[in-house]
Length: 213
Image (cartoon, rainbow, N blue to C red; front, side):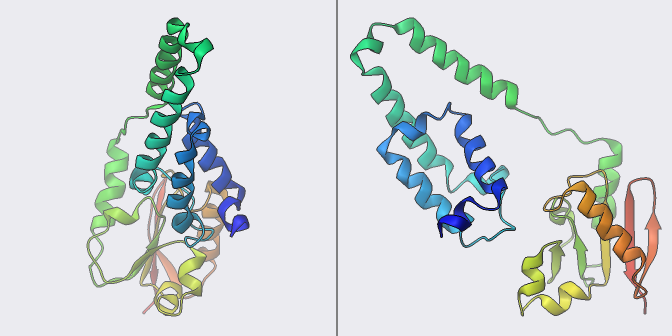
């Protein structure tokens, strides 16, 4: 269980990044164990393919993280030597605001990004499509659609559909999650050599493979 919580190393990096936003102060609170408890089902049962705590993935963890932070903040400034240094308290608070403000990355969609989304929405609801995780939310409702992950390949209930989809759709300039850019390019090259699929659309950044009838 301990190994699954911290490995692959990206899980540990994500865990530390999440706490670094609060200057690791939650570590000082006994309530921090609730953060660990909240992460267990995500990191242990989620396996290697679940790593990110961005977007809504952190929703189950953030309430406990801020509870630990608030408790640690009160404990820290109740310390007698620090009670006499209100300027330091204000400085740390300002540092937290500035650090998190600088880290904000507002979403920005170019016309080319919107084209990627429009193409994703053009697939028939009856088609089974495999894509990268970043594009999956833009597909019209269908019974089966997948992002690239060994989880689907190993699962008996999804294995057949995942290994024999009607189409593959990739945008090489979009977020390649859960792969990295190089692995996504290798997957594209692998499909080019697959005689069961043919390229039905390709431009400077996007490519669609359709299964031959």
